[in-house]
Length: 483
Ligand code: ADP
Image (cartoon, rainbow, N blue to C red; front, side, top):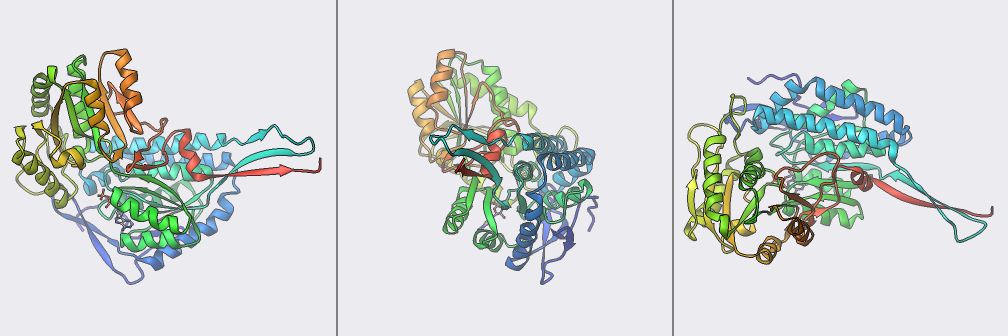
């Protein structure tokens, strides 16, 4: 294949060794900026998944007994290896996913931060001694790793979505089997190489690629798996949660969103535009926390639309992520482009007006122009469904109560944003919004030190922060009697 990279592995990683699929099957990996095939990956099924689980289960027996200090040291080395190989890993990520190289570097550094944060947090998994109601008994609470974790991850952040699961798992003493998206497998398989370089014991991290449904079913049904952690669509999350529920496994689900981005009359409009550009168009609109519905108060609607259109025209440049000055990579595939098209056509047919963009980009690759539409209303598809692409639609509202009601009128509850300079309103609206993450006068708020998790159909559980460890720990109560 034409694409060479030191971290490109066309094999799965189980128990510290690399292999092909049992039947030798492979699938191709495409660069979405060029449509070129950059390599192949093994197409595995249940048998390989069961082996990976078994390897993680064996490794768990000794990994759970390591001290927090030992795990922390190894995780520190893993983070060091990620940083030391930043350039090569970023080139790999951009080749398979398309995001601009600078953003790929940012993501990988973010991944290293998750690993390092949890390496430190590993030493702070405290228990409790609870005052006993019995004079002759003592009450202790300890925390223990849940066991083998099955992780299924998406393509939009191929490195960091793994890092924040893996960091919490390793820190708490769990082992992991990772199944990345078939669109971005190499950044995940790279964790096998990184684990080797860092000196992690065989079987602690296993990575395999293949038939998503079969791998997911094996993870949910195999009794050696204790927990499923998933980031992806609500549709697939519900399948996995259902299957995991039948086997009473723990779950963490980071699912879709339909983020409202509200701008009040009293907001700093330039800041709001800056936030909207970052929140809506980052990763070409392909993040689950991207603004999907922009609600602008009537008094500033026209001014905001004009400023946003100008910023989009002047600041955003679609193209190959390897080229200088490019801010907008391709969408992940044709299906993603088709969805943007459909949402846009639907909006246009219901009275929406395109003020910037509105078309695909000519040439190879799956690109769509950053697009702004005014005149949006609740009957449009984009009001209910996540576009997951560079389409900003502007809804007009009159009152604070109306903005809150419309923002909450969705089955999703991941991220939301609003801009105001009124302190009282800041608190009122923050408290009224039914979401897991709130950006108040900020458009990008993710960090490893803060919790990340949604409510309603956006999932359950938190990643990142001290709370991120809880999902990987069981609580044990011990009563010492006969004192
Ligand atoms: P997206 O729409 O962002 O691609 P998906 O939910 O389809 O989100 O994909 C996220 C992850 O879920 C990917 O790793 C994908 O391969 C995996 N996946 C897709 N379908 C299933 C399934 N039926 N069971 C388990 N995993 C699945």
